[in-house]
Amino acid sequence: MNNLKTGNTFVFNPEIDANYLNSLYGDDYMYLQEVFEAVLDDYQSLTDHIEYSYSSGNLAALRSAVHKFKPVFGFVGLTAVQQLCQDFEKTCDQAASPGELSGDYETLKNKIFQSKQIIEEEKKNLEVFNNNCS
Image (cartoon, rainbow, N blue to C red):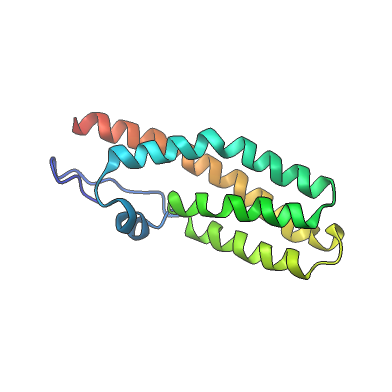
């Protein structure tokens, strides 16, 4: 994606769907930086809710917590993680007990942790990019 004022190009992490972000935000990197910041502000509370729901064995609450978190990944272009959340929701619907979800839950939990690192790094990169383009 290019900054129209300067012609500078911002290169996203390969995990991020840059075309999807472009369709949402165009070349508004300042706003995109704000989106990444807002996502990070809520990240811990969303993950805490997922972990609590899983540890308490409440499948309905777990599904709901993942459902609530799912769009966040779309906001930052992590569409594969968004799909993983969608798939996990379906798995929750089919599971009779939390034990049936253990493998899928660990996969999701790890991906959510990795995603936070990606979002933090991209936020930093966007800050640098935006400061250089001002």
